Image (cartoon, rainbow over all chains, first blue to last red; front, side, top):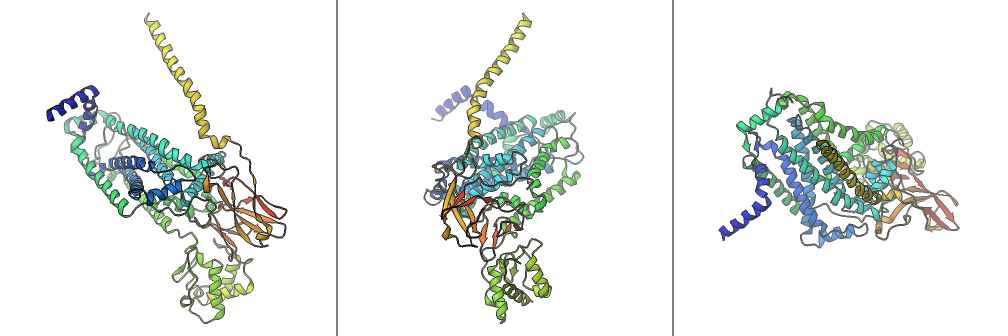
Length: 464
Length: 166
């Protein structure tokens, strides 16, 4: 039996050339010492494969129609056998892919692996990054709940900032003047056909370049990249010290990739996918849209930027950032690769991590949003017998003051905390502030009756 | 002879490329028409009835919902739009788009505070739609609204898109 199987395999292999194609790829020599920092690219690829497989699974259950998608999402989550787990896998797979693509890119930047002759690897990598983020965005939209439709509108508004043609790009994105029957079909086609097609194309190219130019050797301080001699030097390095990619280097990719997948599997099962809540009805205005975590930092940026420059940043920001990313290998393509000799690369990377991480935290907390869920201040907090102040405390909630100002453990964080405001402002200053607003506070002069104003001031005067 | 062969190859190369480009160009016309479809079709806006005048007491601001112009049969709930309708006096109404001018999120009317507030990035507008605080670059966009005998009608409109200079 075994002999017979061997014979069959030999026939197939001889007529198809599978070994001839695969073996040189597996056995191609790689520089020695390429250790754990080299695993993030392959981990991204593992995640991509997971996304393709689970994506096909979801497509078996999904209805890409503006009126039915939401119901099919509920079907997948609540009725389909293991559907919730499948959704979780696709969600955490996306999260993992974004995370790995980010770490992979940062590793390549820190060790300057984008320098000669691997410029095209970096450029195709930037394309893959953009495609991955586009997949993440269109994917969260396909949930087609309230968050989905409003994400589409928010994206259209950003496109609207493109000069001259912005309005048309926005219309094109949502598939018409308003949301409707054409909206979801478009995002579905992008997410399921267009972007994955491009992803596979560019991943193939990206991997082909690894075989053509070889992976970068671990950098050593003082070992400069000279385009004139590098290829010959690298060839010699592989000849004298190279080890076969499989299994000498690849086992680490397998270990790390499998660990990544196992973590995704466990998270998907126990944490599960994001809930779908309200239907995709743009006339439901009582909703608080916010993107998935990997886009929260951009969401936060839009809240924290000075409004005067914001529209320009929305247009020029991406152009500058993407332009810089593409031009990096042209700005510096030779010389030192070691991070120890390139301290600014490390500073830049750490700064980027800190900025993005703090924006993520801010985006999760949204201190700039009114806290609509806050309750009226209880008497225990109001803590006064002055009837005017008590009436004022109720007005403080009714008039929306509490949405933005914190008093003890109640209220929002948009404006300053007012728990002890009477210690720093007197009644006159308070009145001026309430009537005229300013510094990002609405003027209440026209909407408060004079007794209401007095009551609110009485309440604030008791905050000491 | 050799010269002829080279010339012939040059000709065959050109022939193959141009011949291949022909069906590619023809086929791309309907494909790009599908891609650019939303820009190519003319959309007529419609007047929609949103209620009797008596439903809107003077001085109040209420949420009204209506169906967009010419929705596709499979649009479902996505065909709906919302506006905030304010009755200024017996004859006059103002209808504000529910989309924040910052990034399009749905603003909500806080009746007692007499403010529109946006949940996304904290934009706030006064009752006349002008910006009170937060990042919005301009006032809430208005829909056309009219009184037809005793029935209030609103004119459908595209999602308002804020441009870079607003």
